Length: 636
Ligand code: ADP
Ligand code: MG
Image (cartoon, rainbow, N blue to C red):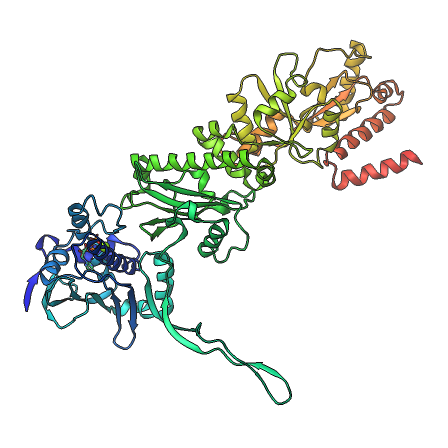
């Protein structure tokens, strides 16, 4: 028996590991299973290249709990270690054997999927165990070794009579970590971290119907048929799927396979994803994965944290912030890359060159996929637009590259259910919707019903009206206005249609300047100035006499502030402000001016104002009651 002391330079590493290295104790299991997987994949590699002359077979990893003796076992059938190797790889902490292996077999082992990196994973066992044993038998023709360490730097190592190749790690679970002796807890961890690891992991057994046995149908004397029960057999309970979809070639997968994998990832999710994007690069970095576009709602906040990050099929985190561009964190799926440094802070991550490349690669892939979906089946793409627009619009706002690419597939739907690309829209409306200052005015509505009368007025002029109703649309409009030349967006209820797209002034006012002045004074006396800005306009005599509008600028600033950023400070708290556009050419307006008694004038003004408010949905409560009462009085 050899006694020794673990590398003195790391004398104090145990308390350190216990406290700081991993804040989550539960990750010890992930580390041990990663090592077991590495040991198995290393053996596979060595047999492949003919260096290990042993039968590889169908190795699996077993996790076992022994509640009575308070032990947890992780057993593999990998390459094992000789006593000398235990000394080297286990006792010299922070000397990563995985790294050495990859170094030695640099060229041939680069795609072997080996996980280890830092040479500290094994010691995470001491976060939950007061004593750890390793019983290991190398594939080489040497006796097995038995290593024991109680968490102090002292250890013992002696020969063992184990004959099967592989390693068994035995954790004597500490008293305050008893949760790791519970079957439910361990199963939960296996599902979280190891669900897609490449070597089958056995955790206990389960009973299934014997597939070899076809139950007979028995007919009794009354002619009643009963089916014989299935014969049950006990099989290993394999908790993982070693070949998840993302590790396969896109050509080998059908839509159904992608959808099944989605279900595997999100068992509680009943809706099918809209489409998926298979990621697959090996230069200049390694990355595979599948991203899914789920149906989006308009609530941006509740949809994050659904993409899972893996490294060589080991689950790492579901917080991909900094790795995936912000707007894509609304998607779902998996990303697997050994090239993402994880032992660094998030802010460092964002500055990392490799990570930046990964992020822009993902952005590009998503844009390419959207473009090909649009080109290959426009009808289908249009049908899905409503469910995906939030992501696309958000991406256009936040990633310049994506904004440029989105030119090819971003859609602008109209209130009549047509969908234009920006270019199509531009060509369609250029002739009719360019104002006298040579500016193109794009009209839009946010709500088809609430803005119905304004939409109709615009359509009567032959204008196209877009329907833009996503939560960040005011930001997007702002962005488009600053990127495109001589273009402005105007919501249909922002002003009278003739003012929204000002053509050469042709309408002559029926009122002279004196009449206008007295009308203006009268209106300002009757109408509360803190709510409405009165504005006289000579419009078509057929247009409404009173029109309430909300100035585009004000409304947009308020909206932008409500959805974060962009708006002016303090705007969100401003009271609602409306314009009251009075059509001086309307008969009713002349009547107001010419009515003799002041009382009757006020009644006409208030009645007209209320009608204008009613059409904007702004008349409520007591004012509505008064309006109705007044209306009955007037028709009496
Ligand atoms: P890393 O996995 O990053 O190399 P670890 O601390 O997890 O670091 O493991 C240290 C080394 O111990 C491994 O590189 C490997 O050589 C050896 N080792 C650990 N577990 C096993 C195992 N189950 N089978 C064979 N070797 C192992
Ligand atoms: Mg390891």
